[in-house]
Image 1 (cartoon, one colour):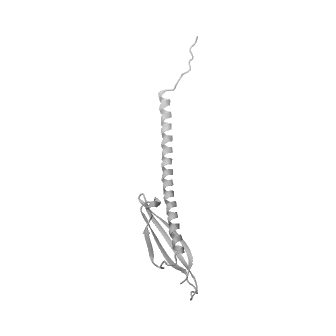
Image 2 (tube, rainbow, N blue to C red; image 1 turned 135 degrees about the horizontal axis):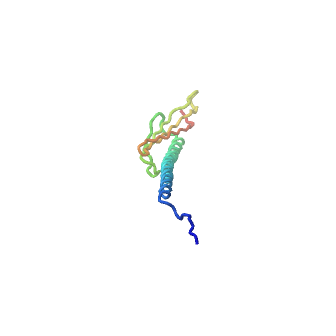
Image 3 (tube, rainbow, N blue to C red; image 1 turned 45 degrees about the horizontal axis):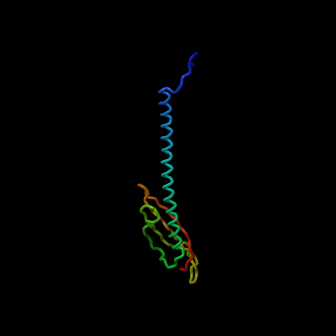
Length: 134
């Protein structure tokens, strides 16, 4: 009987090359996963800030007793899950042409949400309009 001259198994060099290739691929995968997680967190914060800005804007649009030309502000609700932040809002006349007695004018309601994300300060502006009496 003749012995087969075929090798069985891998050499040490082949194992080292395969391990190196696998390590580089796993490193690239983990780097991309980390970037994706950071982006998802940033977008979640922005979605929450958008919902809060919309809520504040809606409240201001339906309340006719709020003063014009004054800066209104307050802290963000901590139950939102946003980091530290605040909101600012102001109601200004947008269009007051032909505003006589009994005429209605258009008010601009501007809301701005500011919060801290890591070392960065993020800002989200939002505005709406309402019809009001002068």
